[in-house]
Image (cartoon, rainbow, N blue to C red; front, side, top):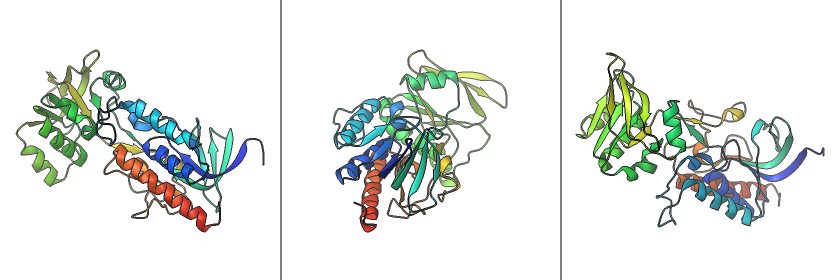
Length: 317
């Protein structure tokens, strides 16, 4: 085997809660997993300041620290954690080939666990991204972060079912929720539209787009524009939520795996199995419904157990 090529029993692609949980279980099963962290080591939780809803942290924990803890736990059981990202895969045969960093390294693996997650879509405003990166009140997950804005005024951008659902969730916690809808109508189902329209503390601003998120170190407001009239106004808010969708990080797998219309990997219901034998999926690369750290970790466990059973049935120990 050439110098840049190696064979492993279990390769894990991705390093969020799903990837690290899969690694913990796979390592304890003596599968000697190799885990590649990808372009965003730690996944989406590295963009979250406080995590209050993961079991076992009574005082809460910040996202980056939680990912460090998970990595240490995986490494404690001898998971080989590496930097690098997958640029090509070949799932033709029973042994799967994965190219790292445009061919700098080639891994052949008896089993592969995909935990590449999904990336939130953002508006792309400088102020939005700056405050997001500073942990200053910009979030793409109301269920994760809404609790911190109890009794406050917030805004949410989006017009689909997810945006409507998150607006409803925020309305139960917050004093006032501004819902910014770019067009003159919502894309959400009629049932979801009825729900948000019937909540007294949700104000839907149709034909509105965000010009700037205001504040130096934290959100202090948002400048919005009515695209029908050209009028601008400032909303006094302390939280700014973006719910315009997620993009699963699955492009590299398209030629091989069955994906749904949005690009999420399809799994065999009740398992972590994909349509390719020996390839498993965990976390947000397959989940467009829950998208929580705890559900990602749960499916990481499933993927490792499925991989262990698959290898045992193949006589690979």
